[in-house]
Image (cartoon, rainbow, N blue to C red; front, top):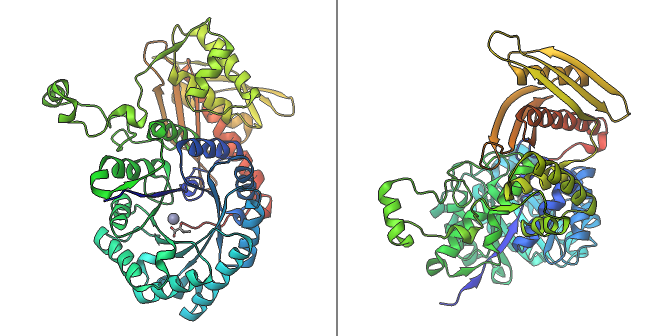
Length: 518
Ligand code: KIV
Ligand code: ZN
């Protein structure tokens, strides 16, 4: 049997960004888009241009700057959405407009208040309008997995006749189970005239933990595009995880007979990048990219591995890009070596960002004997994250110990050039630092999670602080690294405060009202 091509459609920047607290700024989205391009995905869904000016700018920037892959923008089936999507996409060498409209009885009745014939009419109009701009048009009947099969077939047939080149079948609420979902794909294959002229695509949500299984089942029945996100992030329980579906078809090529263009050795790096940018941590036992994915604990397994790796290993760690913690650079390493290492690690930095990393590297090499890949990644990540901030840290000190009341003193710069200082007590030194920062900035947040971990090995390793906090009902994340964990905590907290202020500023602009779909 000849192996066939499976199209990898990545929606980390659109559906993935809809994970609570995962919003990204323009520079972060571009960084991820370049990483996805390097990873080899066929299609990058860069956003939903009408949703907000920020989304529009991001799709436009990705369309203009990221070459070599199809860039897609999402739109509902109405003229305003489609026109806006095209405005954002028109400079892309390979643009795609993705239009969607819900088809299930539940959505028709409660959300859209539309009869079936109205849905069909709007789907046709949407595809035709998109087609008037762009040859490559994808149509998604939202909540397809809960739509009556005969009606689904009717809508799909009309969308194909109107010019859709890809038909995507979303399991919007993660309700499907594998045999049922693949039967729906088979039904469409057998009952829709013209279906063989288009690519059938799957888009599964993970509410029942079945997103990857449902997608794989559909591939067996002829789907040839899979929509997925890095680390499986996305609305609610997330989407089908790119790294899992890609490694499943690669490892079981004997069964699926599919090939993907993915450079699998870049999976781990891309996973780490998305995790650092979104602040959504990857669970240790996550398949393919979790810290334990290739760790063998049981003695019998270790013994087997020593005799022959194939006894307990179905994939090689290096094939997904796992590296041992390598000692890379030292105090005397030059700018050129650092630039090369950063590129090898998969980062695309501007000259200004590189300079920032170099300064950070020199300071770190003074404090720390050995600088590892993970240290360099942390510095590069900080340089990318460092956007326009209202508040920056000048100094932080704290006092704690048994028998003393924990206290902290903090000095911050405001962007208008004012230096502000204050001190406070708290339940512990970190609490005292956070309270002081809140008092200086006048922003109160509710801390939901605070974690510190070591970035690399050794007593002088850098500490990474991760914070999840709530502000006005929204989750905001912050992350920072330093060899001093109190400083890392203060920097991460300040990032949360700056993001909260940025969000408030955006909320005051009514144009930024968000439209959310799953
Ligand atoms: O889950 C969904 O239905 C979607 C569509 C917009 C494709 O994300
Ligand atoms: Zn979705």
